[in-house]
Length: 193
Image 1: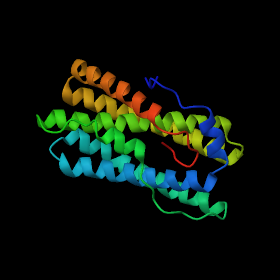
Image 2: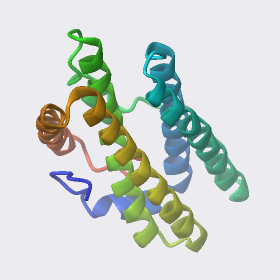
Image 3: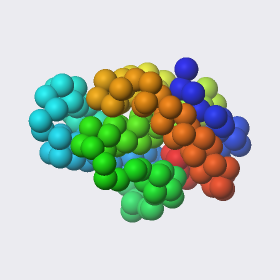
């Protein structure tokens, strides 16, 4: 369904289960960044009315997820730690083609977002199946469904804006590149990506 070329190393979920405070902290900041990205797309492309209409509820939903993660930390007597660099996202950001036609630029940013949502969905599925905490299993199952919807929305919007055939060819390039990024990263349980 997600098209990812390389699935997450199964050791990741075990490590994440042993680093709940770190994984929840990183997750909170991922939700915050997702909110900021959606806001930025609206600010930079207000002339794409369908985009604005589609992303407005995403902004509220992603911010709601941030608040939900904070609640999970609080329930466990844990604190939101400091934000750390997200090497995965930084590496993906290097692959964005800048310049060119405005619609092409927007399609690139939507593919970037779709890929992050796809990987998050895959990781949340792993957490929902493997983490010992029953409440967090359900929490991540619910978020997995949401991330899958966001992935699909971003990919579909990119196709609508940039042309399906052209965008899907570029999407395959994104998936190949992301596989290389995943292979280059250490397996760590304190990061969502």
